[in-house]
Amino acid sequence: MPKLKVTVVGAGAWGTALADHLARAGHEVRLWAYEPEVAQAINEEHANPVFLPGFKLHPELKGASDMAQALTGAGLVVLVMPTHVFRAVLGQAAPHLPAQADIVACSKGIEGETGFTMCQVAADVLAPEHQAHLAALSGPSFAKEVAGGAPTAVTVASGRPEVAQAVQAAFAGPRFRVYTSSDIIGVELGGAVKNPLAIAAGMVAGLELGHNAMSAMITRGLAEMTRLGLSLGADLATLAGLAGLGDLVLTCTGSLSRNRTVGTRLAKGETIEEITSSMRQVAEGVKNTRTILSLAQRKGVEMPIIEAVEGVIYRGTHPEDALHELMTREPKPEHY
Image (tube, rainbow, N blue to C red; front, side, top):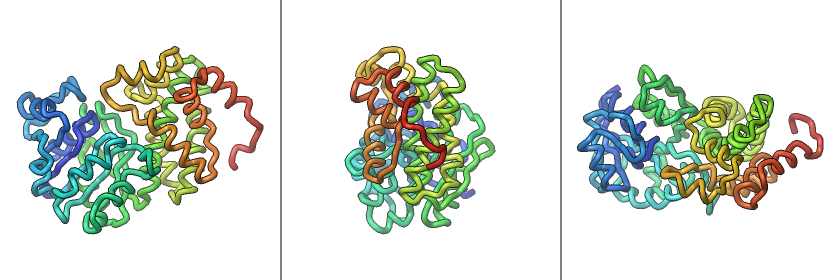
């Protein structure tokens, strides 16, 4: 793979891990950070002690807090901003994007006001010449494990095969395998819906409901993800693959999952305000629960687990009561 100039926009844990991975793959990488002190630490300490503590970053990885400087000459732009600021930060970046750069969205979530995925937000913000270079990357991938070199497999989707293949080649490495897809909506939707489902999984764990309950929650959560995905034009195979089932299993069972941690703490009696105020990094599922539920209601799709999570977070439903409501719903066939 030829050496690329890569700009990663967003220096949270996931953005930092991806930037470090790309630098280790031999690319010239700049990591844009909103916080100047984070950019300074990357340059001077080769570390991000705020968002990815405990990891030494590649010495050639450069931090920047000036957007124009960060994007100059980039052939690949990787967008890893929190979803609630994705539109605003991309608007700041847009005037400085090189015309032929491939642009890959790695943020997992749905925009609250519009119900758009991140690629849909990007298409809404960017000029037509940039829209033709859009891709989405998602899959089961904890930032800390990628930063530590653990074997990881993800999917990149684009409407243009040559864009997906270019991103695949840029990211590929002996410990980071990338598959291609044309199903952007399926890849992005899987990455978004798994977050509130992981909050539900955390509640199952926090209430000590056992393995039967966890297995049922993941399986029925996948059914909800699939119903919504199909209503939006996603491919069933995508939702059964890395970006759907794979990411769902990881986020529901892995101790590194921020969303699962939120659910566990809710089950232990903490309020959502107490939990979120104590977290420096964003748990996307908190904001996206209502967004996904609203999208499902507009499409006429039933998502009872998502609705139960929304009740616990926003309407004060006790997790035990939410469980009772789910278990005593009207009997149904498994597939409907």
